[in-house]
Every structure is written in structure tokens, then in C-alpha cells.
Length: 255
Ligand SMILES: CC(C)(COP(=O)(O)OP(=O)(O)OC[C@H]1O[C@@H](n2cnc3c(N)ncnc32)[C@H](O)[C@@H]1OP(=O)(O)O)[C@@H](O)C(=O)NCCC(=O)NCCS
Image 1 (cartoon, rainbow, N blue to C red):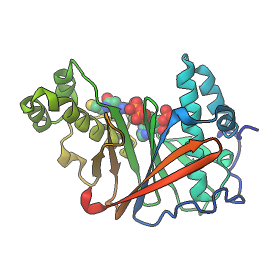
Image 2 (cartoon, helix red, strand yellow):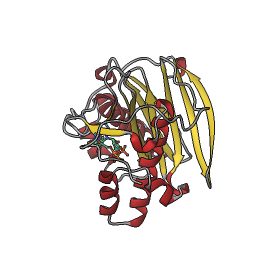
Image 3 (cartoon, protein in one colour):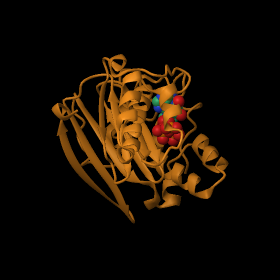
Image 4 (cartoon, helix red, strand yellow):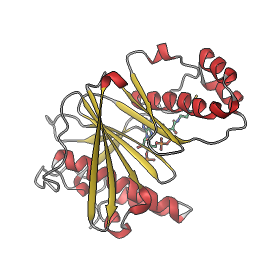
């Protein structure tokens, strides 16, 4: 059975704790989940999606993109449902004015903030009770017009730093600046329409930014509208019906 459409139905009650041993999300924590979207069992994953999500999956031109969307959305539902003690198909997503997804919960229930990013088959999910978060991942690759993009997107100091770097270190630095900008825009919910190119680090004031390497050849940044006490990295890998979770913890001093 597919999940109810987010436009039409209210959220079901917290009647099913599907994962009794689900990690505890404490105040001040951000959990960052990492998964590979090529490992999913497709039909099983499709069963937890809403009609809207299944429609979107059907509109992808390439099968691989559709499969990854289904896997990515199903895992998001399982992760958030795990924290809430809800079945994944019972979650209802809404979108903010610039398209940032948020969870519809029953009145009086504490909000659960999240953000999602994917590059190729790698997906990252940031989840917290504390406040708005944004996350962005990119595969490090050659960008021939890096100077032009930096000219319109990065602050003068970042542009100067990129120019000074030796070519073999430049693309990593470029994607660090890029993901920091994107993660900030995603945390603030501004997205593309609200972007004010060339924001310096000082203009990200009030937001914590943490860049990390989620997988070889990739770079990601987590942005939060608050200073986290701890960030806990969870890896989700699926083999058949079994899900293995691995947690690694960092203190905020490393952010
Ligand atoms: C919407 C946007 C934030 C998505 O980023 P992306 O790198 O294309 O894709 P990601 O994989 O990182 O993130 C996609 C997810 O972000 C979430 N998202 C969508 N709109 C969002 C918004 N306004 N704010 C935060 N999150 C958003 C969704 O969950 C989406 O997942 P879905 O496609 O499965 O629904 C992005 O297109 C955007 O606006 N980028 C700004 C581009 C730019 O010019 N950057 C500034 C440099 S100057």
C-alpha cells in the first residue's frame, strides 16, 4: 500500500515503533545519516512512498534517477519515522515558500528538523530537534569555469584564496566553498531564489558550518542555525532486509 498524499490527509498517530532500538536524538545533537542509494530493494521501498512521490518517481527520464529517488525518499521516511515512532508511510511532507521540505506533525508535537542531499548514489540526511539544518554534498570534479562561478558566487576572500592555490588543490577548495554556500542556503531555506551571491563567512554569522569527507572523492558541508553540542554520523547499509547502523561521534569543538 502506498502512503497517503501529503495534500489530503492528516498525520496518523504514533502507534508503531518500527525500530525499538532506534538511536536517541538528544537536545543539542545533529544526526547525519549516510547511505548508498543503489543498495535498496525497490518494490519494498516504493511501498512507503505517497502518491505524489510515486508520480515524481515515474516522471524521471532515466531509470537510475527514478530508482535513486525512490530509495532516497523511502530511507528519509524510515529515518524520520524511526525517531518519531511512526510508520514511514504515515509521514506527511510539506514544502516551505522556496521548496524546503518540512514534516507535518500533530499540534503540540516538537518539530523534527531535517535536510537531505545527494550526489550520484551517495545520500546524506541531517536530523535534529534543535533548529534548522542544511546539508550539501558534491563529487569533487574538474570545473573548467571555476573562476567565473567563483566570481558570481563566492566572497572576494574565497576567490583570492582559490586563485592562489596550486591547481591540484583548487577543486577541493572550490567545492568546500560551494557546499558551504549551499548548505547555508538550505539551512536558511532560501534555496536558489533567495541566494545572495558572494556571501562571506561573516555573513553566514549565526550559522555553524562543518565540512567533511563523507566518501572518497566527495565533499559535504553541514550547516545549522545553532551550535550543536554533538554531531553523530550514522551509516545505513542494507543487505536484503537487514539494516546495519554504525555511529561515529564528533564534539562541536571540531566544527
Ligand atoms: C534547491 C537546492 C537547494 C537543491 O540543491 P541541490 O544541490 O540541487 O540538490 P541536493 O541533492 O543537495 O538537495 C536536494 C534536496 O534539498 C531539499 N530542498 C529542496 N529545496 C530546498 C530549499 N529551498 N531549502 C533547503 N532544502 C531544499 C529537498 O529535500 C531535495 O531533495 P529531493 O529532490 O529529493 O526532494 C538547490 O537547487 C538550490 O537552490 N541551489 C542554489 C544553487 C546556487 O546557485 N547556489 C549558490 C551558489 S552562488
